[in-house]
Amino acid sequence: MPQLAVIIPAFNSEAVLPVTLARLAAVRSSLPETAVLLVDDGSADGTSAAAGRAAEKLGLDLRVLRHEKNRGYGAAQKTGLKAALELGCRAAVLLHSDGQYAPEELPAMVRPLLDGSAEMCAGSRLLSGRARAEGMPLARYLANSWLTALENAVFGLDFAEYHSGYMAYSPAALRAIKFETLTDKFHFDGEMLLCAGKLGLRVTQVPVSANYGPGTSSLSPLPYLAEVAGVLLRYLRRGYFFQRQEPR
Ligand SMILES: Nc1nc2c(ncn2[C@@H]2O[C@H](COP(=O)(O)OP(=O)(O)O)[C@@H](O)[C@H]2O)c(=O)[nH]1
Ligand SMILES: [Mg+2]
Image 1 (spheres, helix red, strand yellow):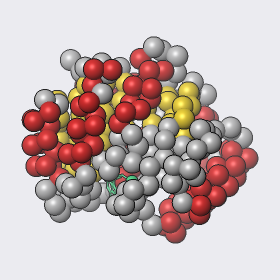
Image 2 (tube, helix red, strand yellow; image 1 turned 90 degrees about the vertical axis):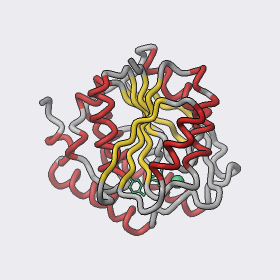
Image 3 (cartoon, protein in one colour; image 1 turned 120 degrees about the vertical axis):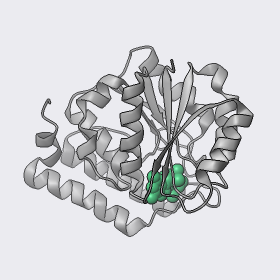
Image 4 (cartoon, helix red, strand yellow; image 1 turned 180 degrees about the vertical axis):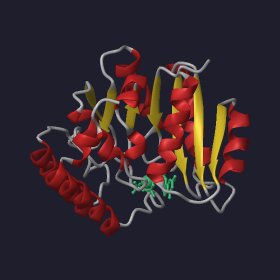
């Protein structure tokens, strides 16, 4: 039975996914028995088929979950996280299909969950002090840092970054956070972190590298900023997340 679920949300990722899977396979000896849960979010290209071929060649335990229509990054994670809970894994970790978050850093991301020292692990590109040198564009670096400072002030929390896509969870965290009530769009990871902070879960933060090669981002800044602003406003007006995250 797999001990670790690696959840990969993927939308039109046929070109990049085989490389990411090969990098994941190269570190598997440092991971417990792993199932790869690929959520193909209504891709129009051959994402699932390309992943299937690569996984067979690499000997990875790949399970494909398909959305018939594109539902969004958060919705895809919800599908993957529910499946990870059903599998009974000891930890679930998010991995982007484009390799923007290094698969080589998976062992460090899941260690705090496997050794029981945390219920959530949040990778942050702002912790190492090398994000700019590693290629994070200046506008993204400043927006990320300033928004994080604002979010911390509003939420009364102290996290290094609300805008990272490298997150790992224990089953206890996934049962405590009502993740199905969160956004279907891109700010899902930040909302998960906010909920974990407000629920008092033990969160370990680890530095991860920033990678901004060609084709690593399809995110449009303005809709994303609107999502972040929406969370801040709802939180200020109605304690939105806190109320909805009362124990089940
Ligand atoms: N499920 C799902 N995943 C998406 C969607 N758009 C992008 N992704 C995936 O989410 C990850 C991050 O998307 P990306 O465009 O690289 O944005 P970034 O956060 O700026 O790097 C990648 O693994 C994409 O394949 C979508 O509509 N649905
Ligand atoms: Mg990306």
